[in-house]
Image 1 (cartoon, rainbow, N blue to C red):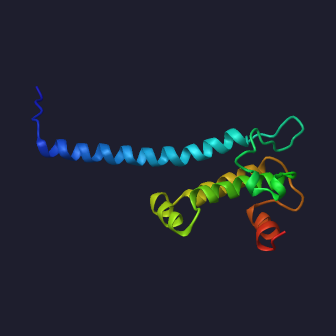
Image 2: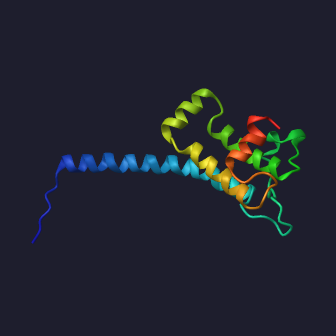
Image 3: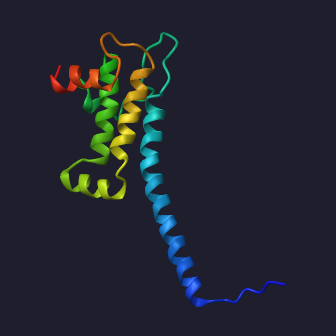
Length: 139
């Protein structure tokens, strides 16, 4: 028969570990919620006409020219800018977010890559093409 002795040191370590796990879950929940919200407002599926479609553009308007995102790239760009603005509004937020979760930028790039892969775009076959055409040269 096994007997467990109640050990106050074990209880303390268990308490610390449980609190650390809960804090990490809370951080993930906050970050994951942002991605979930974007998927809700800007689904990662094309509509019946094979177009990208905002379900709710309220959160994206300020990232569009004249509060309108007319093209596919305008919509994808607005979603991407929303993420960067949300997670890295200023340099202090960038440093804090980077310390909290170093993978946020990777998650954003994965989202961007996936959204671009939903349909073919003339001259754009990967993230480097997108960067060269829309970011590097500032089109």
